[in-house]
Length: 157
Image (cartoon, rainbow, N blue to C red; front, side, top):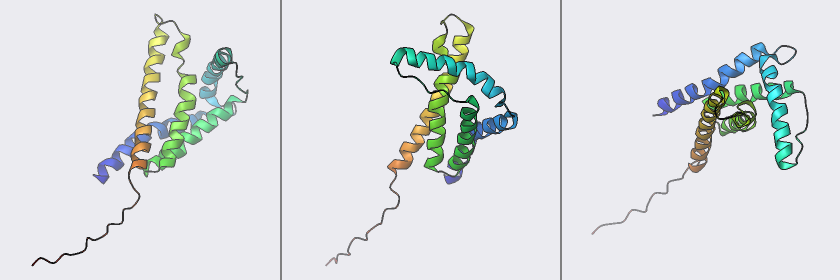
């Protein structure tokens, strides 16, 4: 059963590790295609959050966000393979931050093709986040080590 669990973690983490590897290779000086795709979506997200909550999202270089996402996915994926909850937390944090920004289906009319594509990707990322939360919950519900006390032997007459 341990082998099946390990293979499952490897397959699950491969999604994040391969994505991090691709983004790392394309990063370049300007943050690569990921930064170019994320910048306009981040600007729209910032305006939406500010308009609805009144809280202004601080501005920063989008390359930093892409670099952090690559680091979280790479390191988190490797740690997750070995069963670390820290890896699961890193991946979950990356999902919570990036998913609503990158897959902004809520900015499109339901009749448009983009809405369906973005909603599908958003739903897939929610499923990944759910699996990570399930893993964290299961890891935290299993006691570390239980010392088994031997029951005293009773004499039968």
